[in-house]
Amino acid sequence: MTNDKVFNMDFAKIYSLLVAKAEKKGRTADEVAEVTCWLTGYRREELKRLQEESVTYGDFFRQAPSPNPNRKQITGVVCGIRVENIEDLLMQEIRYLDKLVDELAKGKPMEKILRKEA
Image (tube, rainbow, N blue to C red; front, side, top):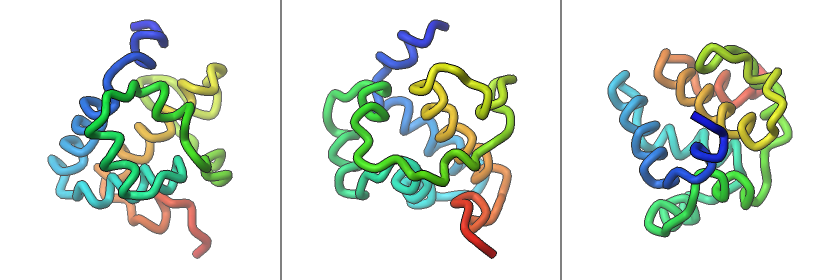
């Protein structure tokens, strides 16, 4: 799948799949919203509104109000690729969210997922 196909996918559809993945492993939609808002700077009300509008996945990230500077601490493998080595910056943002949801699904504590100081 090309990056353009991913960028043009419907945000609400992808987001619902991320929530389903987390819920399947005992996490909540609220936790997915928390990590999404942490990553992008959207407020929860904005996140809900964007799920109801026709927004592409690429535009969701392009228009993120305040990407968290600590997102650069997100490392590891998603879909067989190290997120820290992804050259396309928009795809890297998308994979950061994938990685955060993976960490949720694996039961990692929220403090570690959000890269908070101990």
